[in-house]
Length: 103
Image (cartoon, rainbow, N blue to C red):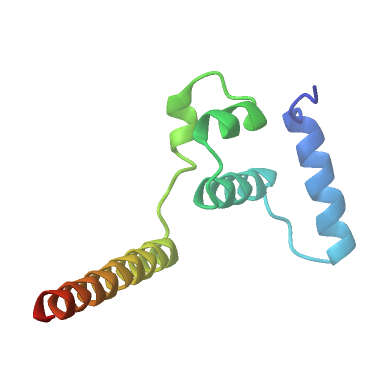
């Protein structure tokens, strides 16, 4: 089993990447927060994310489960697509039953 990164290791990795990319200094925690938020939004179960991040308490992991506006829009669009598909199936089924009853 792989152990989660220690914080100092994470800082060193982020600093090396930053220097290689020639970008301004960004605190390593910003990368960690973005990673964790993206994983939560991507569907990673929070108990798994808790282990990946090395947190002891689930309350600490919940701060990474922010809902971004883009996710709200995407989830809404997906839910509407499912609802519309179900409505079309119901309409087709109703027409089929009406045709059978007319025979």
